Image (cartoon, rainbow, N blue to C red; front, side):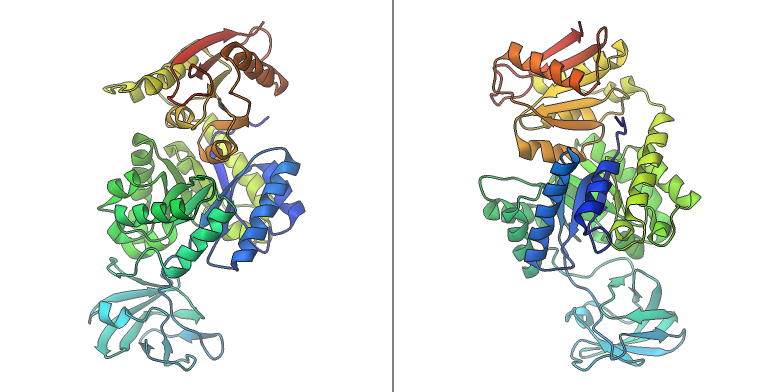
Amino acid sequence: MSRRATKIVATLGPASNDPQILEQMIRAGVNVVRLNFSHGTAQDHTNRAQMVREAARRAGREVGIMADLQGPKIRVGKFADGKIFLEPGQKFVMDAARVELGDIDGVGLDYKTLPQEVKVGDVLLLNDGLIVITVDAVRGSAIHTTVKLGGELSNNKGINKQGGGLSAPALTAKDMDDIRTAMAFKADYVAVSFPKSATDMEMARQLCNVAAADGHRPGLIAKIERAEAIPLLEEILLASDGIMVARGDLAVEVGNAVVPALQKRMIKLAREHDRVVITATQMMESMITNPVPTRAEVSDVANAVLDGTDAVMLSAETAAGKYPLETVIEMAKICHAAESGDAFELESDFTGKTFTTVPYAVSMGALFTAHHLGAKAIVALTESGSSARWMSRHLIRVPIYAMTSNIATQRRMTLYRNVRPLLIDTSMDRDTALAQAERDLKALNIVSVGDVYVITCGEPMGASGGANMLKICLVE
């Protein structure tokens, strides 16, 4: 059994939309499947979610589903020939009122208020920053520009403003419809694109809660990809269940050179505030067309792991690439190798910390005890998953097995670093539940006679209120 702690998020798309390939990817190490709501209909997403659940069942392991909302469409319109090639120095007009298809001289805009939000001298970046244009004049609905860095521009490519400052709301009417779709199939996580403040995340949570059936509550992931989000990073984080270091749009807005340090800061901040963190964008980009990653990509993934990210994410690599399965296999190997070479000091995590609640103190006690006793496992009997999440914020080589009777909790915990979530009946009395937990550990070949493991639970069993008991067990 793999002891890999870092989780893998894989995007579903044409390359992986086959039940057999998806099952193989799950067996190879995918923990969470991302459904990209920028493409496809509501029924497409519902069908894919069902396919994910069935593939996970066949693979014998539970996976989470993350619904990734499209967010505002700040994009150019379509071209008569599908694409054009812009040369440095040429003039190019983007016109919000244009209805005819675009050509070499200009194109329409999906984002109709852009002319009101730019001024002379602003730098606009198209197609993920591959094309750079500067604003010469704004005349009514038309933005007149000069191309500084040219290249191929095709239909509906994105527009960013250097330094940020575009006012598009994080949640569009389409996103609100998509939230209803995601809640109908009980997505485990909802990722919100381009949030600028805590208010955006609070609104998304309210929409999810209203749309959810049977009290389902998804985890909310804030995708940090706007320059405006950086000064408000902590408040956005606290209004969310986790963040995604969305390095594509973020790099376009703040500059490529700034992103690595921001990535480290975001991972550290998320762990300090007991939130999960996903590192995303171009992690294994070359494997879209090549069967092996570059050495730079290997280092990129490994560094995110060493920084303590909960998960690393694959986008086009598994959605549209030639080698979706091979990419997952390679990423799993890199994560495992990076974790094996990681040095850490658990005690330094606790220096100056105050344990303000009994469940939190019990969870931290389990970590400390397991580390110093050389335990084979930590077991958290949990209804909400909180104790497993707290433990997962600290880097430790002892694997955490979170046992819950709640399938939604199990699926949500698929994203937590170093946590393997298992389904168990925790409504029974304490001694029966503890005996069942040990039988499960033995059956999974996690422990054998003579091994020590640590277990936390709440008494009475099955009641809410959190862990209040820590037990050290010797397998006989």
